[in-house]
Length: 269
Length: 103
Image 1 (cartoon, each protein chain N blue to C red):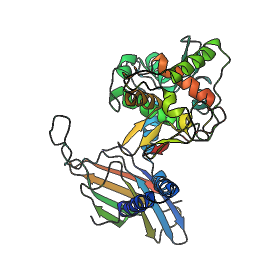
Image 2: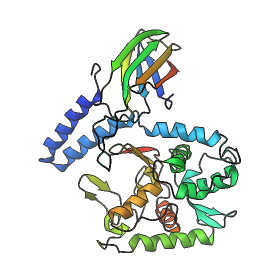
Image 3: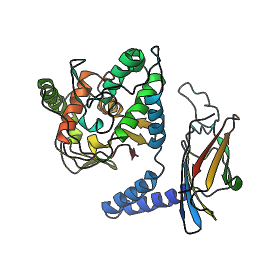
């Protein structure tokens, strides 16, 4: 190849990191943080943001309408600040909904796109890819804002309690719960730090870090994708897209993260 | 016509740092899918950057460049207001051109 690529620089950093592993753990983590800093510039999440913005304004579906009248909780068409107040109760559907389920509602009512086209699709394909891009853009419009989920409606409070029960419920082949990995401070799996999600883990961490671009798989992961994969890793059956269980967990984590600033969209290993 | 690129160009003194994020699958042609078949090569082969219509940078890329490539380079003699254009062409003949103004 004719041009200088950052591959050489990254390889050098990786060598530094592995050499440091034999010494203090801090050296490895510092090297990883440096690598992540380098990746931040030119986060491919930007490409999904651009796509999501385009999808929001584009007339699509059988009704040939855009999404710019979609109510994400702060009024029709209000996008800024919506992400940090989700999941929340919606009177028109009579349910507590997260960002992705609300996008599916809007795509259905405003554009005529059937929910099953999203629910039954695979990650990264068809209408599921579109909701991922939309979720990335909507979330990016609240970047830097603090999470402030409402708990004024009884259903919102109920969903918090459901989420809490689900968080601590052990099961599956390994008898894991979310709490097995995310119930204590200072834990990690190999080189992946595990935030404690029973409280506020800090700005841009945990609930405040998704949707994120996963470099290792070249995919944009939303919170639904992250939860699906958590269950998969625990050797549970994967939850249905936008199922009540996943929304309840979102309420639990989101309320716990009150005050944490969203860093979305972020970049991950 | 591929998906849009994100181009940022920032001038400082007589140089501009250009950062380009390209949207492309960049299949190396060496991967196999679940059935064991080779996933065909599909990647950017040529990248050309022009400042005010004059070519200032070009690349020949192969299978080693990863998905959604990020390219950063410095152009001498660029100042705020100049037009920077980037074009990529892949091995299937698809191409994409995007422009940005140096800020």
